[in-house]
Length: 204
Image 1 (cartoon, one colour):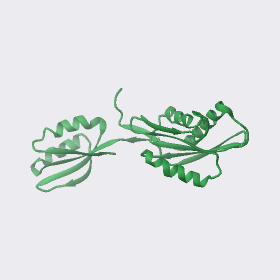
Image 2 (cartoon, rainbow, N blue to C red):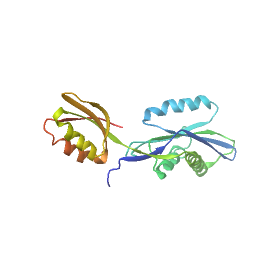
Image 3 (tube, rainbow, N blue to C red):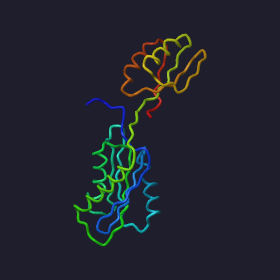
Image 4 (cartoon, rainbow, N blue to C red):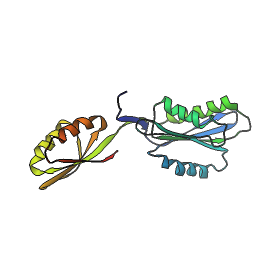
């Protein structure tokens, strides 16, 4: 499987309402960047819906879509968080948190009914928001002597790299952004420059 340097996520927070036999399911979807986003978002929704019976959620993270967590918040195991996550998986959406707030309406839905309700509420929320594709870039800084400026800039132009910061003195530095799938080729070219030093900064 080839490495992908793009991923799909949602463009903005969104909410939807699904009703089934008296129960009300409020689905909230949020674009997120880490699992540290879970606690404040869930706390906010619990404050807004203190009388709700359950605040169930699922989160999917990372470029390769491999990180996820689910929470059934008192519902029967596998009937809430997992259906929410499975909906994210089916749409290949990552870096997204979905919280479904449930108000119990007095009629038991049973395991199949709960699974369907949490799945449907999540689908309704995601249907209301634009799915966008984002590119993952690695950020590097190259340091080199001024006489090498033309060689460095030629590589930057040929590989269509984005220059983020530049300092041109006797010793120059350029911070640039490169797609992950380009890294090997770009580094091979830059490392052939005598005396040039390339430093990895971060991925973003």
